[in-house]
Length: 330
Image 1 (cartoon, rainbow, N blue to C red):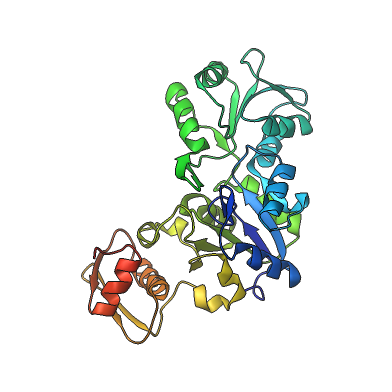
Image 2: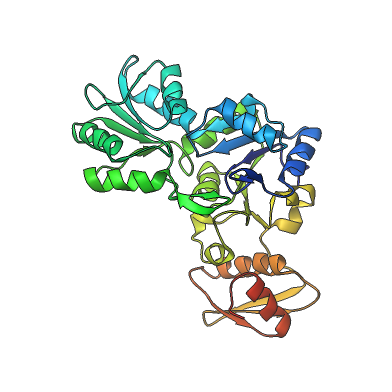
């Protein structure tokens, strides 16, 4: 796969690590990419930490990341703000000091109250509370522009799925009736920033979420790889709308060390997959694994129009594979 692409645009949470734990095989895959001259960018919707902090965390987990390899939604949000409000404007920051620093770096003034704020920027902070949201509500209702770093509803951690920035954005959306401008995935600003920093002509977007990573890749016209180490599941993948469908699917990032054809969504000789009268059926035609079945199921079902399928296993091997994928009950 590393022969086919000249850059890897890697999501962080759920793709290369989960909280304080590296995803198995991810560090080795990143090291191999660098050895082969493939550019690496860690592209994260998480706006709570500065690029230096992200690089340090990655290095502690064995990735040896440089600051220039990190692209955050905080950087993208600050860049969006710089094009929408005059230099020197006061911007109410809902987020960490790392986000405030990015606002400051583009010539704007970060503040923490609504008075005088012409814009609001919102990023993930574990310390964000009602009083902070109330200040933002006042500013937005008074006409301040609102930029959200991302709208991820959840954040994958070693403890499971926890509330993401999108959950708090939803609270403000409900309170104000206003939709924010979004800087992070699946919107274009963050992805465009990451691609531009690599000078790549054929980058591959890698992530664990259909609604952000894969949708962001599709919006930017880029190939994508969904890894099943984070949020999105085979059930969601099979039912995905066209704008959420990846080019490749794999258990984890280690697939980049193997031929691209192995992980590409498409038919597999080991599995016979048919769509008849709205029923998606599978039968073994050889010794195939469950992920190959998933790739074949997606190809057939998406070609037939997609939606939520009715699945049928024609033999024991297919039944076992569907159970392994979470697509059937035992």
